[in-house]
Amino acid sequence: MLGRVLDLIAEGSVNKGTELAAFAGIAFVAGGLLAPVWATFNWPVPEIPTPLPKWARAGIVAVLLAGWVYLIVKS
Image 1: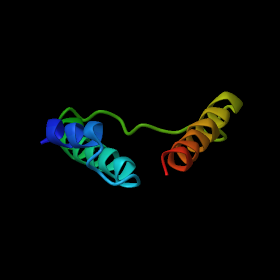
Image 2: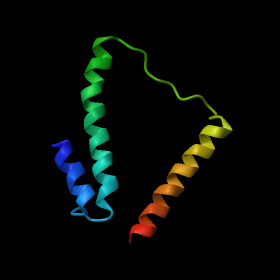
Image 3: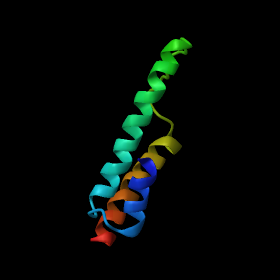
């Protein structure tokens, strides 16, 4: 199924805004598959340091801006 989704995205059969939603859905399913394994091995819950380092905040802003630029350019 993942291969079919990626093929549709590659050939342009998916609406412009749907590409990001497809990747979000894939990440959601992957997280659902990883969660039972994580719980089975009793691994610790990941923690996000507060406040985030400046390089991490700059990276998050850059990724968000790149996503918006991509959507604007593709439309």
